[in-house]
Amino acid sequence: MRAATLLGSRRAVSAALRRAGSASPAPAAATAAPALRRLTAAAATPPAAAPAVAARRLAPPRRFSAAAAPRAAGAAVAAPPAPPRSEVLTSDPANNVSEYIYSKMGTNLHLQPDHPICVIKQAIYDYFEATAPGLFKPFDGLHPVVSARANFDEVLVPADHVSRSPNDTYYVNADTVLRCHTSAHQTELLRAGHSGFLVTGDVYRRDSIDATHYPVFHQMEGVRVFGPEDWAAAGMGATEFAEKELKGALEGMARALFGDGIECRWVDAYFPFTEPSYELEIFFNGKWLEVLGCGVMQQSILDANHPGGSGKKAWAFGLGLERLAMVLFGISDIRLFWSGDERFLRQFKRGDLKARFKPYSKFPPCLKDMAFWVSPNFTENNLCELVRGIGGDLVEEVTLIDEFTNSKTGRTSNCYRITYRSMERSLTDEEVNSLQDRVRKAVSEELGVELR
Image (cartoon, rainbow, N blue to C red; front, side):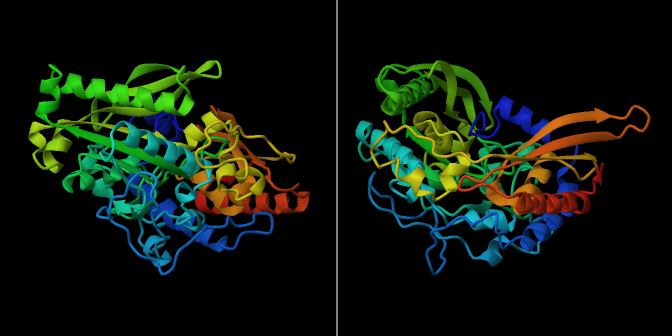
């Protein structure tokens, strides 16, 4: 799982920079995106080895906006459907959304009451409702296709930030993206005058493939706005007061989820849209684990968007629900959240935070290595997109196992190991070989590498 759920943590940025290499955003969008889309469109019908994930969709498709009526914590909410395919998979040269990614839209795991993602979400909603009744308005039906301005500019993500690259973000066109964090809705809800809200939804990021990373996951954004009367009554400065309230609220949330005896600590961090910024860590199962990122909202965001914002102060946090669920329930593979397997789903019930995942039969892995001379179009994220588009959730992990540079030619060779494993059955050599042959062909044709 990502080290931080809010964009911009030093560790997350460093990791992304290592993966992105030196390719500039414009060439990546112009060359890799159409090729990737053609490849994954050809694989729109999953192979026999990769049964499609069942998605709960509503018809007819309709847009959801931030103006959706707020509801009390625990109340039912209409599930936002997948947007029309033609609105997401377009011929725009900047479009890099694949059929595989589109197939996940509208599944709404965070709205399925007994799903572990929803169990965690509802527990957090219940905590905030109990501590501040009626203050935090929940929004979990907002549309995942947002403007690049809302996703980046309005929350002060720098113009040269690595997260803006099509190597890391899914673009519908140059001005529209699949949200990569729920912070994309922060400013529109502030402009609507909300002084406390919780936003939950599916978010999308191009990333590596392993047991804790998935291109679609779920986040929750929380914001609370204070007025001068609040910090005056406490006899504190505005920033000091907001920071104190933030830490108190989030430590209380950690205790509500993990038990009263949980030990917490705060680590200084960096996020473009908060200052000061922190990460909350808990001591759980014998080690320190990062839970979320947060901070005091940058004053310029509040000033520009909230009515009377220049005289107010706010805090914000962002957390990944998969990360919390994997830690709390002991879930070992992020693909399980999407499996639809009753052996997994029946282990969880709404309101039960004491459930612990009991693994069922684990089928043997099939390992395939692939070595090649890299090309200017190659990045690890592009490789993972191609592999996922072909193998779907049969791909458990993609790992770089060897890298060297020829001292005479200056060319760099990478060797990646692809681990195929079904969570439902044993794979045959024939189907794995077929998938690997398609991967090798696609990597050569689409990313321009020279296979060895």
